[in-house]
Image 1 (cartoon, helix red, strand yellow):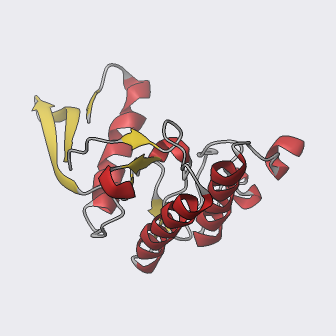
Image 2: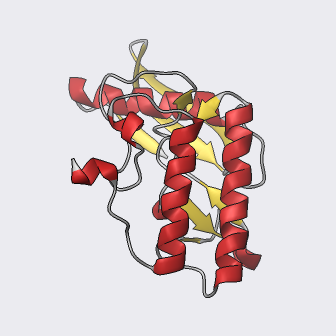
Length: 173
């Protein structure tokens, strides 16, 4: 992943990659994509770009390759739950679990990806972050917790089993 600072507004994207590295480098679970190294590119002692080296995976996202049967859906859900439990045990929440943040690798092994919204448990964010339809109500108010990830994982399970997006409380207002 490579992000360049093109203007003052793009600083938040550099900060997001730095945060993703800070959290991802502390995780070590077979269901979470490994983050290996962060490289800061500087000009005149200022960071102008960051590059993050991650585990290379040849896989499709869950939304591109939904499970073929209920047994496969249960196995995928179980791996997602174990990966999230690891994050929670380490003191972090993913805060953006959804089908395109879950890779399906060979032998139906999964990798949770995109820790760009991840944060320490108890963090109150200044702006809403996450994906409508997968966000728990409290997350829409700026507070993500392990319960928020569990909510999103539940929505993920419904999508895998029914092939439909359930109406969320956020969308209902």
